[in-house]
Image (cartoon, rainbow, N blue to C red):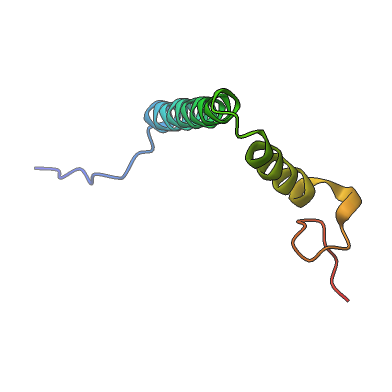
Amino acid sequence: MVHKKKYMTINFKKIGNVLAMGYVYFAFLFVISALGVQMFFIYLTVSGQDERMRKISNEIEWKIDGTFKNNPDNIWYEGP
């Protein structure tokens, strides 16, 4: 009687399916969060809180924009 050793085989199709579903879930969560943020800003517009909306959008823009990279809160800040 010959015993065959079972070796671990890599199933690339299964790995591809898992990666594809991970991407789909990530895209779905991204779209849902974007819609949530959009609904929040629509609420701010309808309720007349334009100053709060402007403050939030300026904070986000100043953190990302490279023009304000001398500010330590900016993501492009290069410390001394």
